[in-house]
Length: 75
Image (cartoon, one colour):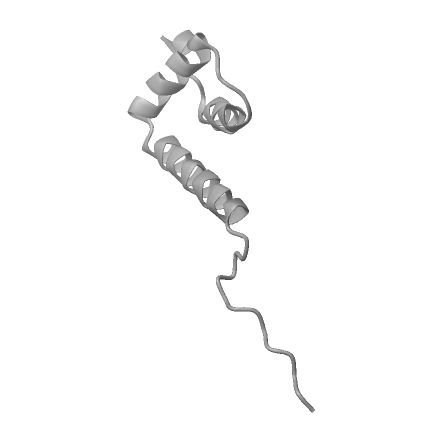
């Protein structure tokens, strides 16, 4: 059974790689099996997805601070 399961270190690597490229079917299956039994890696996966979405939103926002431009000082 160990052959079919990733270690947490391998799962973290696959989660990260999955953000950069499509995972092969075998990689997705092994990762899904690991995530089904490991809460820590499931949490890590959720955090990575959250960060990915947040960074995508920031990159789409012309003003990421969402503050109006500063007025020039008058003398």
